[in-house]
Every structure is written in structure tokens, then in C-alpha cells.
Image (cartoon, rainbow, N blue to C red; front, side, top):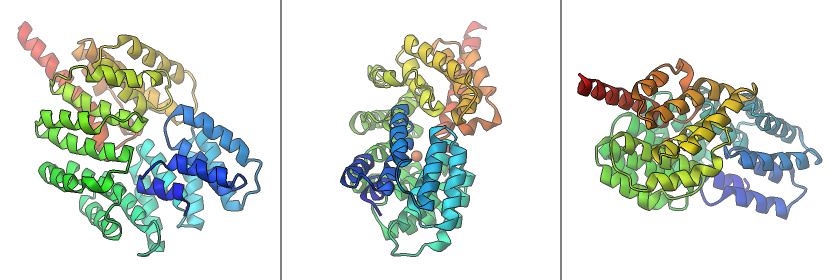
Length: 390
Ligand SMILES: [Fe+2]
């Protein structure tokens, strides 16, 4: 297994830098280029998608095995924003080779972006019989299975699978993450805080994944009403600049905002970091979190630019993000903007009208919960207004 893929599976170091180093060391290696392009496409950052296109162009000039050619086909589909089609190609690769960890990890991530945990679970369940203890990467496969199980509501099986992964590799960040979700979904907040807290030294080199695990701990604090502790975690553990870290930052600040916690200049700082992404309209899930920062900071200029970019995206009817933006992303952005203007009845109405496919905006149950929380907060603020007026 390449260092880049091992780092990606372990959420460790900088997998993309490792992939680029591998390409520099072996410019004719199709595998090295395939890993680089796949990691770029996994980033959800449109700037990296363009770079993945350049790697794709290089790959078309190399001699490829049938399996490498299948990976290239999946990359082409992802470049065209047809990630569901890419997942189908990865499933064909995995049917032939259930040990292809690049295909497995990328497909799991795409299904997370598509809000499709059932597909994640079917995939890991199909792969596991081919895996045995001692095989490199087995703990990652178990951890991916654990995550899919919990998103599908089978919490006991999820916890058991995560602990099997941790028995193989006590540092496995993905397994820690699956347990964090189990604790969240079962309301085991104190226990989750202790369990994750005592293990935090094990994932200090996990980059954005470390931030996300701290986000989970902060979320337990928010749900227990311990807002000062959540803010302290934000200040000391969640200051990264990557897209996934910005998503976690917004998700925490917005929950605190809904709870009426004063946040000083934190939203302004987050909005400044989100500003370069305001007009991406590449991923509705990113846009939703950028919007939280813009509204929280009172940056109506950035909020308007984001909504205008989403409107332009909706006018171009292709790619997975078209439907995500049309059905969920754009109405959710309008709802957050309305909330920021104090139009609580309109915000609640827009969020109530989100279709049953709202989960297709991607992310986890724990992350998407913010839409329900916003709707409840908007309804509560509206009800208070009505009582005052009566
Ligand atoms: Fe999570």
C-alpha cells in the first residue's frame, strides 16, 4: 500500500503531499497518479477538481492495466460531478478485487457526500468476508463498516465493529469517529466526552480528522448546555483552515448562536476564512456551512453572493450538485439568510418545506441535524414574537 493511501486511510499527516511525492519519485507510475487524482477529487474543493483534471490528462497518456483503466473511468465520472456513477465503477472494481482500498475509501466518501449510508453499508458488508486479521488496512475497513452501520441506525453492531478495529489498531481515527457518532446518536454524551477525551492524544497527527473529533466533543458539551466548554474547544482545537475544518467551525458556531451564546468576533473570523469559497457553488454542503458563517457575522454581501452563485448553478442542469442545490442547498441558504434578517416565520417555512430527500445534501445525521435545530429555533423565535405582540 502506498504511503499516501495509508495516510488517507489512517487520517494521518498530509496524504495529498505524500501522493505528490510519489508522483515526483515515479512520474510514469499510473498508480501514483491515480491516488493523487482521487485524493484531489475527495477534497470537495473546486480548486482541487481543476488540478485533478490535469492529473487525469497525464493519466490518459500512460499505459494502464484494466483495473487502472477502471479507476480512470471513475475519476472521469467524478470530474463530471457524476459521483454516483463513479461509485458504480468502484463497485465493479471491488467485485473483482475486494482488497482495493483506494476504490473502497473513495466510494465510501462519495456516498457520504451523497448522503447514501445504505450504499456504504452494502459495500463494506460485501467486502468484509474477503478480509482477515493481519491484512494491512483491515482496521480501516472495519471502521468504515462501523460508520456505515451507525448511519443506518444499527448502533450496537457499529460499536462492536469499531472496537474490533481498535483492537487491531488502537490509533484508528476512523474507528474513534464511528464510536463518537454512536455516542452522539444514543445520547451518551458524558460517556462520549470521557471516552474520546481520554483518547485524544492518539489522534494528534490526524489533521482535519482531529478537528472533527474535537467538534464531536464540543457537540456533547453544547447538548449538555456547557457552552463555555464548547467555546473553549473551538478556540483551542478548531482553528484550522481546510474546508472540512471550516465546516466544523461553522457547524459549532451556528449551534451556539441558535442557543443564544454570544460569540464575539468568532463568526467574523470564520466568515473571512470562508469568503474565498462564497461563489463556488460546487458542493451544497460546503455552501450551507459558509452561509452559517456569513449570516452569523452579518455579512449580507457574502450571503447574497453565495445565493446568486447557487442560483447560477441551478440554471446549469447537470452533475450531482445540481439537484442537491436545487432541492436543499438553495432553499436552506435562503432560510439561513431569512433567519439572519430576523424573518423567523419565513425561515421556518422554508426549512419545513425541504423535501424528504434533504439528506441528499450529504454529511452525517449529526451534521444535518443543524437544519432541524435551525427550524426549531426559528419557530421558537417566531412564537416568542407573537406572544409579545399579543
Ligand atoms: Fe462526524
